Length: 423
Figure 1 (cartoon, rainbow, N blue to C red):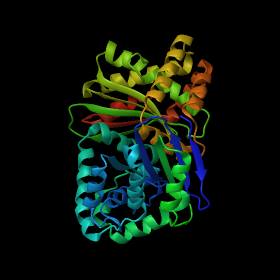
Figure 2 (cartoon, rainbow, N blue to C red):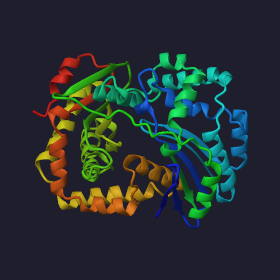
Figure 3 (cartoon, one colour):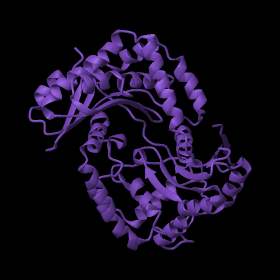
Figure 4 (cartoon, rainbow, N blue to C red):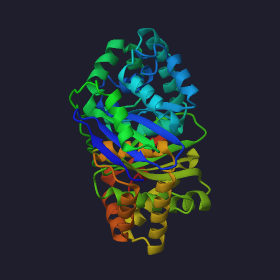
């Protein structure tokens, strides 16, 4: 799983991940922009623009032209937008690499953003917003962002509000794209049985005229908090979905490896503490998970679950108790080893395909600027000690970092807020 990173004179970065003998090749073009780069008036623009890039290019005037050509290659293709990145990709048999690369580069570099399709896609985006509003286990993460960060880019939805979607014009897309879709913010990643020379040759050929531009930054993410915080989105649902979260460390912070192990111990796998307690012993939930999400300058340690509304306070107390235990008592060597092996095993299993490898290295590049091999990450995980785990637990499991987002039919929020404390 070695890789080669090359930075061209114009600032464009190329990451090649050779995978000998793999029958598929993945071409991913990533740009360092997303909802965290938007102003309040622009919120939702990055994601909407991602949709519009599929509506035709100078070489393929209609959306159908792009779709038919990719389907004819047997390709799997799509795009995605997050807080800090937007990606466009296609995956197919390696014999189609030149054509696959040409199509994705054309889509990225030459979209026409036709005004007539803008009106149609507006409806698509509005329906996408409605779809996620109807999924409480998804909606709760938007509630969490608002709770953690407030009215700043990091606290807003990637999809944006409906009022923004309704008012965007073609000029908004052209101006935004002109500022962000430039060489220093672009990363080309190819994973498959391809040589570095072949990838660089195609990149130099297709991206030779990409605008140089400037690498615009985003506002730094800051969390100001002194007491536990609760935000409830009241909704009549069969389940109450909640996320308990703590602000933590960015992708460059060495403590992130320890936070990953801590998440394994708490809520990764069917033998984790929370799964054993909430599901096996109490029968209180179908799912419970813990995870550590890393961004360029911040992180979130989150525990999520879905429960019956009548057990809300009971489950909150259990979550807090299990967090406190990890801050007060070192984990055993046996449990620590199990957590490490579970994390490392899933790290490698999650990277068995060319598309997962491409997305992994692109995210690593955007997060740190210095991508690591999975083997390097494995070494960092194996170095984590029980003392490290307890130290990180003590650092993050505090009242002044405690946040709880809920989507559900909560009648008495005051009583919920009362039990939300480590004291």
